[in-house]
Image (cartoon, rainbow, N blue to C red; front, side, top):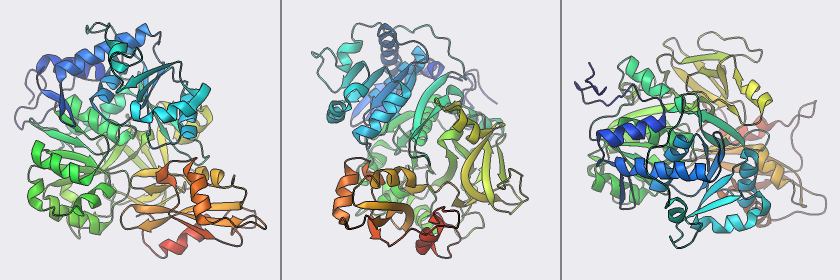
Length: 534
């Protein structure tokens, strides 16, 4: 039974069903609890009232800069309170936020800016060297975060003259909110357009069946370990804002700092990738007493080993919920609830169960649905799904078919409806939660004059889940050293995509039609493993 504000009073769970767009979220909580901290970051605090006012100024400033509804606004920087001010400012001006992975190189950033057509860039000062390399790819307007107020292109000066009054907007749940770039098998990142509904659909699905697989409660303090340029980081932040609780933002994840924040700020919930759990477990001197305030950890972004999960359950002493989904599904579509996290239990290898109202099926290579237990491509149907791949209607039609997202993951569904992931169809490598696609690295590596051909695969790694392994066929008469290849790539692709090892081979194995037998090379590392994901 909900009270007059929509809060579920009987168990202090927070659910406000009338909120369906992010502009409504910040407006409502600014009125309901103006002094409550919305964001804490590096010792600074921003209340809900301040978040509302500052995002109003940003919305007015975006309009004053000539940005129309649907215009793209890029953000290159680490997480801070300013990131969320800008997120809500975009929501209130009907513009679309394009958060850029700050680990990318200038050529990779250039592609995203040009592909999205971003008209304005919010730039953290530490990434100014990237801007200098962009040339004509830089947007017409650049606003510098961290510059002094006296500088006309600084963030404070840019918004200083704008009113903090609420702008009139006509936002609906289907209004585009963000455009997140995800790499693909073609080697070029694609812009996944997500609407406001992606931030509310799963919340509604859980509340509709009174499920607490993932829940938000009065007094929660939520840690965000996943960057905002990832759908997981964006989704987790918005879920907590929708509930009106405090978000603790880390500019970049560091295990020691995370332990300190949990202990000193009384963190109750956190969203992380499995590699972060391992880093926390390995932090010197850490004990279960450091985590007594935690009540739930939500994790996802890459598969988790049973041993890591069991170690985490023992150390953190709280509930765990695993989430599975894609950027294209608006983040999570499947969840392994806390009740299924039983060491040695039959479902510890499962990705989870679809939320109420979310569809899951497995199909063969002809598109026919397979019976229970048979392995094929996992497809998901969710109201949180993407609007489209920006400017790529053919690619959109390949991935989004009759309302179903084709994930590219191979797996099966058991008799109870649980989804199990066993392999990848699209060859993705997941390094500490970051998707890395072989074609992108191969395309760059083969530009080196000493490389005739290259094949990239993932190999299991205890710490990061997987690492990148490069098989290289040297050009005739020229065999570059691994150091040469590493230096060449480091100037052109992000560091997390760099191979951990380069192995020279005489030829690339192919089938009679000439297709690379990538699986043959990859299986050297995975052998007879039941799951060829780590």
